[in-house]
Length: 113
Length: 114
Image (cartoon, rainbow over all chains, first blue to last red; front, side):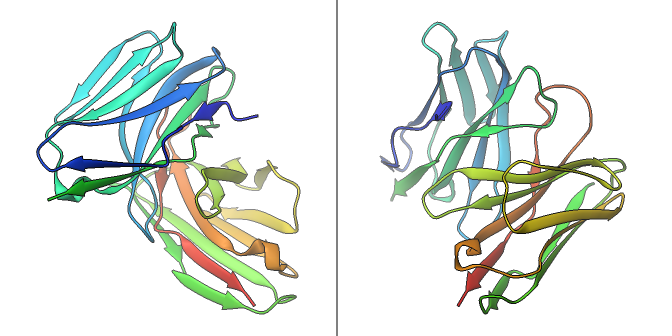
C-alpha cells in the first residue's frame, strides 16, 4: 500500500523553463512533506519542506505547493538548469512519528540544453 | 557543520559471506541514525533506525542487523549474505525531536552479491 506516490517515472524539460514535479499521498495524517534530490551513486540531498498547515514554501528557485484537499503536492523549479538533472523524491512525515519518512519512488528529471 | 561518512562506496561479496558497513556522523550529538536500502527504480526502504546508543529498531525482518556502539557510529551487519541483499545502502542522520526533521544522507554503498 503506497502512501506516497510519484506517478511520473521521468520528466524532460528544456533548460530555462519551469520543471514541475508531482506527488500524491493517501494518508491525511502527515504533518510535513519533504523533497529530496539525488544524483547517481550519491545519497539524497534535502531540498525543501512544507508543513501541512501551509500551502506554499519558497527557497530560491524551488517552490513547493501543497493542496490538502487534493492530497497533492508539487515542486516547481524555475528556471531549470542542467545541474537540476537528477532523481527527485517526495517524502512525508507521519504525525505520530518523529523519525519515520514515507518515500515516493522518485521522478527522474532531465534538463535538455 | 555536520557531515556523514559512509564506507565503502562499493563492495562485491560472495553469497554466504559476512558484511559490515560503517557510518559515522560528525558535528552533532545525539542524532537519530538510519539505514536504508534502495532497490533499482524504487523508493527508499527503511531498514533500521536508532535514537541512542544500543537502541536499535528494525523495520523489516531480514538477515541484516544493526548496531550503534557509539553515539555517532552506526553499523550494518550480516553473518551470511544472500543474493537478495544486493542493493544500494544508505546511512542517514537527523536531529532529534520535532516533526519534519529532514534526514541527511551519506553517499551510499553499492553492494553486489555474487
